[in-house]
Structure formats: structure tokens, C-alpha cells
Length: 235
Ligand code: GTP
Image 1 (cartoon, rainbow, N blue to C red):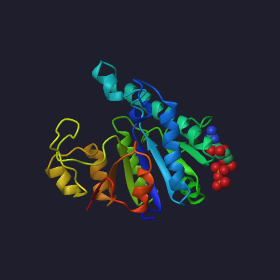
Image 2: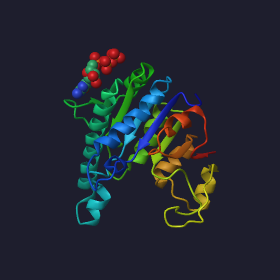
Image 3: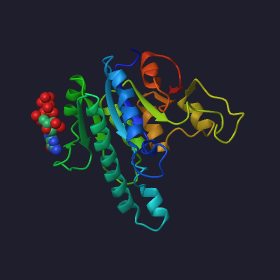
Image 4: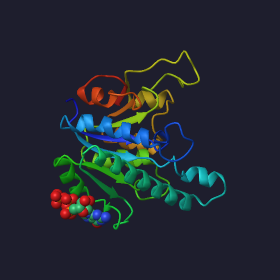
């Protein structure tokens, strides 16, 4: 395996599947099966999942809600998704632990870095809920932060497109995919990979970001095996 320990970032919206809102149990099951394939190869997997399928702080703020209040709701949304994912993974026979950045200790463990590391060493999937625990930070930033803390080899950002393109491939049919690109080039070309806070944190800590299509079966395993099926951003 090319990667021994990964931080998988999943978007909340992806959990909606064909729905407009909430969680599609089929999509959840597919993701759990994809993750099982890499666990079976001995890869250590930590996961950060977004909450946009339930609530987005920024969207709330744009409709007049207090931003901090909205972000707190978003953090809880990531915990709901984390619980759903935990359940789906356990249905596949995978051992998991959910750790949250905000304490809800009747439901999940609080985030403790050393403990997360032990869980990973024992082959458990660790899901990090509650973002960074602070408003104004995205779950992409939480994903990069946790990836650095646990010394992940890379952050794998599962999306519905298969990499980073010269333009938005859903709008521009002439858009061309990059196989590799540097952090510097992403910034110079104004490409959108993650928000700037997340992106610069990743760059400063030399954490490669790999953008790939999580909805295509077998992709996650191909990626951790070393196949370049997405776009790798590194120094
Ligand atoms: P090891 O000691 O490495 O085997 O890890 P462990 O997670 O099995 O240890 P522990 O005995 O602490 O945890 C047993 C179970 O309780 C696990 O399912 C944990 O996720 C859960 N657990 C531990 N701490 C908390 C907590 O603060 N809140 C909640 N809700 N569950 C917890």
C-alpha cells in the first residue's frame, strides 16, 4: 500500500445520494464497503465528514441567522453524520470510534489525540465529529488539522468529480484534469481545492491533498494502492 495512514474527508452532501436532504442509507452503505476494502489491506483510516446535508452555518448566516449559532448547528450536523457512518461501518464488521471536538460524552468520546492514535494502531476507524470545535472554520480545515495531528500520510478528499481541473468540469467541457499540481500553482491559478485556511495549513505542514471521485466503486482502494486516479496536490 502506498499510504499506511489516511485521513479521508467526505462531504456531508455526498451522503444525500439522490435525495435533497438528509442521509441516503444506500450511499452510506456503499461508502462503508469502500472503506472496508482499505481496512482489510491494513490501512489505518481516520475520517472527517461534513454536515452540509443537514445544516450549513454559512447558509444560515446568509438568511440572517447569527453565524456562530449557525456554525454550532453545523458542528452538531457533522456529529449526526458521524454517528450514521459509525453505524454503517459497524454493519460491515469494522471497529470504530467516534471522537468529537465538542463534548457530547454520553454519545461519543471527546477528541484526544493520543487516544485517536491508539485506536488507529489497533485497526479501528476513527471518525472525528464536530469540526475543529470552533465557529468560522470549515470541516476541510478540521480534516487538515486532524490529519496533521495524527501524522496521516495524506488527506484524501472524496468528491463527485475525479480531480482538479483547469476549469469547472461540470460547466466547461474543455476543462482538463491535472494529475499532479503544486500548492503554489493551485493558488496562482486560482483553483478551488479547499478554503484558504485549510489549504495553507496543509501546505505549511507538507501534507499532500488528493482529490478523487469517492462515488466510483473501488476508487478508494486504487488510490491507497498507489494508482493515480485523482489529482495530487503537494509541494
Ligand atoms: P482501548 O483501551 O485501547 O481498548 O480502547 P477502548 O476505546 O476500547 O477503551 P474504553 O474501554 O475506554 O472504551 C470502550 C467503549 O466506550 C468504546 O466503544 C468507546 O468508544 C466508548 N467510550 C469511551 N469513552 C467514552 C466517552 O467519553 N463517551 C462515550 N459516549 N463513549 C466512550
